[in-house]
Image 1 (cartoon, rainbow, N blue to C red):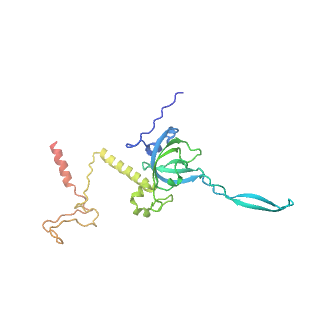
Image 2: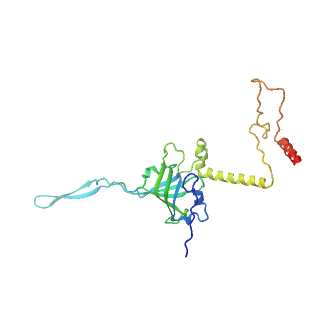
Image 3: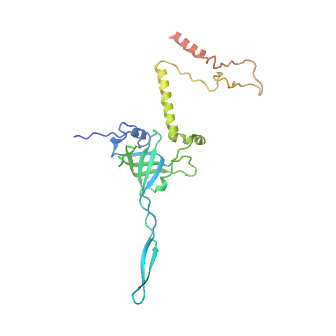
Length: 269
């Protein structure tokens, strides 16, 4: 049977890394790319370390004390600390995202490649090269990346970085607006809002509606609670030459100028 050609998703415009959205939101969830070598980048959303449970132990040594006749007087146990051993190898399990989708990609990094202390903090930015594979057990992730090289690490300060593994209240994120899109809640709401806005504009565009952008400074008072923005020649004095008329929400928004322009153009055609 002839082998099927596997198409690797196109990389980023400015690098050879794979955008996670093209991998995680594919029809098979990335199973078709198992065994392929790819480069991914993003930030760490959660992390944990496996296999680092060994510690320095005391080895008891039995010494038998004999007298001159050969009889045992007492047994003495001494605790001797072993020689310093190299740190045991462990595996760092990371959930990485690049912001292109809400889903995360599991990444496994051996401690022999990079010290785990550089990868474990939440928010650490990494660029990793490795091979895609299926997880050994059944879980919510279809594929995972076994890292072979760590090309870049952008470390963060644990004491000042606001996000963590735990769920944070939304009001806490008001002071850190630049990090809000990194949370699952805000990222999901932004995507839903974007999809609804695009669908609404597409509907009216298909039905030949014209979108009018209302200026920020306008004479239209749609809520009835705002004040007129006026510029006067003299500070503290109002210009009484001409009083601008504001249109309330109950009277509707005046589009006579736009209608007149469209009507004039229609007559010229």
